[in-house]
Length: 335
Image 1 (spheres, rainbow, N blue to C red):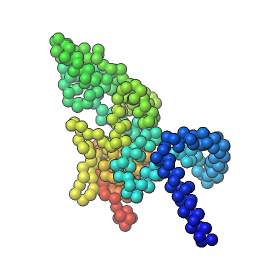
Image 2: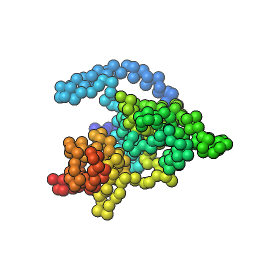
Image 3: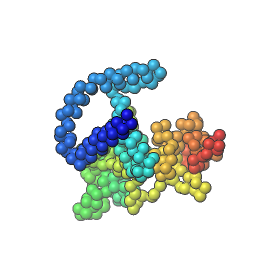
Image 4: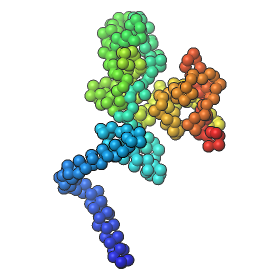
């Protein structure tokens, strides 16, 4: 019995595990073609069985208050990939940056543009009725290649001025800046709802061959803007150029804490500091503090949640503008 067990273990390991997997890796195309028809047959044969099992699981979980939509696959491929990446990262086989990049790709369909957009308070908006020379001066100071122009009120966006179009018009204008017709070189603004997920918006950017969109809410009010670079940064991290400031709004302190501007997003802070603050409860750090405190704190107030100490440094009217966040606390410090 011991000999049979040893022989069968070797046979199964070599001929049922290592050998077929080696063949599949070396001759992947041939193996895929050979197995495609049997695989399709098995999927059609056992598909109803899998569906029935998932139906039973969901019905059972509903008894305990856990509701899952039948349209959601319990064994979703994205979750399997995410689990594999996390496992290999814990084993030291996947670097932290690679893990974030792969996770960013998987998160695109779960995030809306409202979570990464530049809020309207941080946007550069120019009045279309300004003289041409003043508009040119402000575009040069803006340090952005695309600037929305409005008329009468900021919500009334009439077009987007592209710096490249402006330079071309300047080069062709016989009378210089004074002879520019700004309205003639404006591009039509592209408005998108704030509920658009990042995956769909990325595909829309690629299909439309445009890198800039204005975000509006259900009432049509301007909420902010989103660019192709914003979405790519969710995958590869911050993309800094000669006009960007690294870790803008995040200032590390010698004691391990950081001073953070209120508008900094939770996701950006997590990436910058390798922390695990929850990203689903609020978009910005200020929003996270207000969500947890259930109030608008006063300067000097301190809160402890999610393993960190949050101290409000400055508040402007009803907006938290600066906070100090400690390094992760020990269990004794949290209590």
